[in-house]
Length: 182
View (cartoon, rainbow, N blue to C red):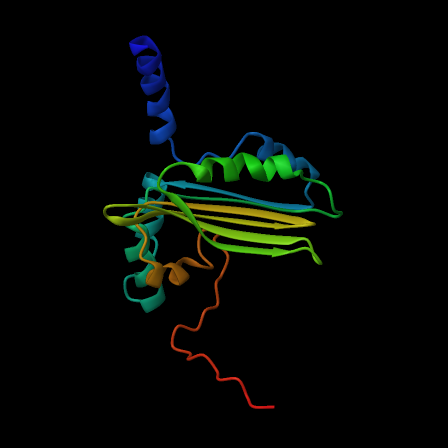
């Protein structure tokens, strides 16, 4: 019994320490796609990219501050000419990693009519949010974004439009509109 527990613990260490890895099967999708994006920025590349961002421009300064503490930004996006070019198994290979301890799905949107699916997962620990993954699957498009490192959700929209991360047009100052009486 002790040997079984020891094997389990030894086998579990890499699982719990492992960050999100995009499966190799996703690389094969690029050959089928009419358009593909593959962004891999580890911490050293983010530091280098940060040197090219101006501290004088307010938007660039915000992005520079945000990426300073990140370990990596990884984006895979594919656009296909017809439906069925990727399989649910391709997406599930990423989703299964997001069931690991520390990960929580905070957004899940599914449209049976249009076949769209969007999910947002965060990884948190005692220091706050330390990772974010977005899975956006449409019949002819698949986009996966993984941001590894401490994240301030208020600053996250500033990262949109940079480094292959989709632009998120969220008006943080807008107040919800009241429903008009009928």
